[in-house]
Amino acid sequence: MSDFIVRTSAQLPALLHAFRKQEGLTQAEAALRLGVTQQTMSALERNAEKVSAERLMKLLGILGVELVLRKVDPLGIEPSASADLPGQPAGPAW
Image 1 (cartoon, rainbow, N blue to C red):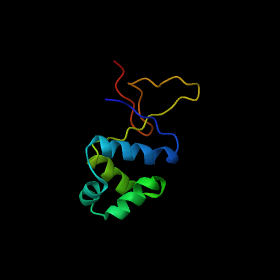
Image 2: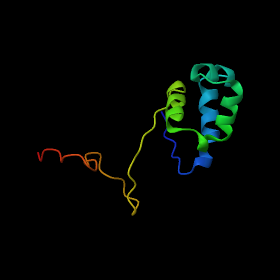
Image 3: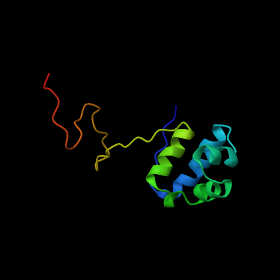
Image 4: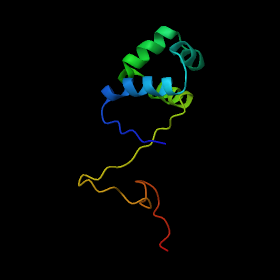
C-alpha cells in the first residue's frame, strides 16, 4: 500500500485516473457505480477540484482509496502517533 501526498487540487485528476485504471474500471463502469453519466465521470476526472466532498468521498470508496488527513508540523517534524486531536479530551497519562 502506498501513500500519495496531495497538496494541490491540480494533483487530483491524474491520481483519480490512475486509481480507476488500477481498479480495472472504465469511466463508464466507474460512472455507473457513482450514479452519473460517463460524460460526468470524464469531467469529474478532468476537474476534480470542483467536485463536492461528498461525491469525491463516494468515488474514493469505489476506487478502494481512503482519505487520510495528517497534521503537518511547520518545522517538518511528523507529529507523534499518540498526539491528541484538537478539540478532543486528552488521553490518559500512563
